[in-house]
Image (cartoon, rainbow, N blue to C red; front, side):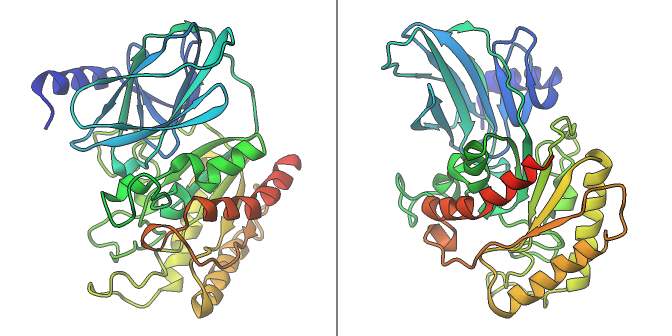
Length: 364
């Protein structure tokens, strides 16, 4: 548990909280992107995978203040002057200060702070910087939202610092190098990550939608939970494309111990159709892309593809929206932790998917 003073600080900040998916603050010194909760005094809670805060500054000194807003540690990743410089582990407890080593002699510097982990791994508070800030501008780009599960979030993809058989699940996340952020940087698009490990469209990895929330339950909550106390997502991002990669967990056999029913195509397709209808209500001009999974093979892959075609065909007569597109990843034997794609595998997914999405964006 947090000390009382820290708990009171967070409570005070949350009273004045307001959410935003991508914006500049009033004095144009910080740029926030992704699923974030903007608080008072330029503080922000980084929620979703690869959500970020960035700023420009002058001089050779820069220290940032961060807090893991949960009773365990968390991580952020840093990019300084366009170069990835690694990740920071934020131990549980109060606000901590992290000096950033400046090596170049350029007059102005640009620091980007990305949440390494997903929403369900806890949140990170950015509580300011000692740097001498300068203004930051926002370049308008095409936008892609990635909705998915652990594969999309880059979970269990990185055992370079802590081996896969050691540590906690979130120790092996690498959101910055997940395929969504990686391909977005490659094709110069902005991105929003809405992904949760183990989650599905009608059931989860090891739950028949009895004890756990599925994606349609949590998507419209900013924090990707069912907590009524958390703010709603404001849909301000308005992507050109929404990529949906959900089904790996619906098709999963679970842990082999808990009761698992046979896959139900009707439930999956029905939930998928209703989910897309909800997305259209908030993003009427969006292009929807639905994908298979590189982890679902054999007969299950055939059923999966049939389900996706049924979802697409359900909107065949929809003249109000762009025709739904289907993208098929190639089958993959993953090399990451607990059967997940590792960072190199994520690059393979990037190389497969990026040309397809770039072509779609260029058609807008």
